[in-house]
Amino acid sequence: MNTTRSFRILASLVLVLTLCFGTGIAKNSSQKAAPTWMKAVTKARPGKFAQIPPCELVYHMSWNGLVKAGEAKLKLGMRDAKAPNTVWGVCEGRSAGLAKNMWFYRNRLDSQVDLRSLRPVGFQWTELEKKERTVTVARFANGKVKSRQTVTRVGKKDKVRDRTFAYDRTHDLLSSTLYLRSLPLNNGDTISLVVHPAKSAYFAQFHVVGRENFKTSLGNQKAIRLDVKLHKIDRDTLELERHDKFKKATLWISEDAYRMPLEIRSEVFIGSVRATLAERRPLKADAKR
Image 1 (cartoon, rainbow, N blue to C red):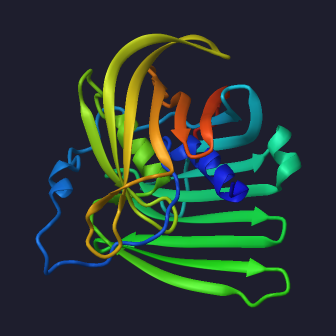
Image 2: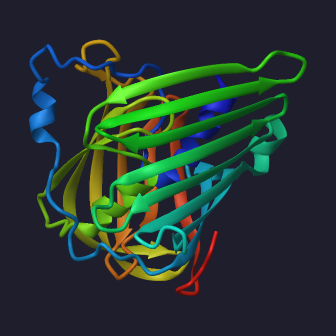
């Protein structure tokens, strides 16, 4: 088992609502007919829940809800005086518990989103392992995602790779989360998004199953239950491919002003993994990164 990739999946569960990593970037195929999945992409304007209260969320990650694997702290709704029409999110994650004894892993994601459209501006994702540091920087503009990934290994020359993904309705981890939570999420709705978490793009579908009471560490909460389907996007054809590392996922979103995940349960190639909300606290309205 590739333990580094395993924890990447666990860490990304918190922000992307069970989106995980893969390989390949779609190339511009403007001379070909658009794949049929593009017609299903949700194009509605952000809904009435567009503004998220500034908050800090702490998630615990585990296998089967029993073996502790990681922790992640997510800060949302932070503003920048130099870019008043944008909002920032910062997520810091690390391996913990039994997983920490197996491998060392830390990450930090800084993401900037346009407040009016809830479309991404750019992000920087830094991952630290025992002998390796990976930094991915991406910018979203003019219908394209341009990213640069730099891998630094002890005693070796840096590896740098530039990539371009051409699709004008692509989200990153934070913007997809903010956009999804903004929508009505009526029972029976299906929201389809293209998400670019790091170096690759995915087609994700979120089906609203219904409402239910959900027990959490914060007490019983009214929750919206969604089922998740995920496909890779082929780098050359833009056609969808089955994601062998991802089987299925269910998530519960709080039905309140926050509208953020209470818990995510996902069946992936390493087994059953969970991200569970452990703490939630407000931040000051003028909170900075």
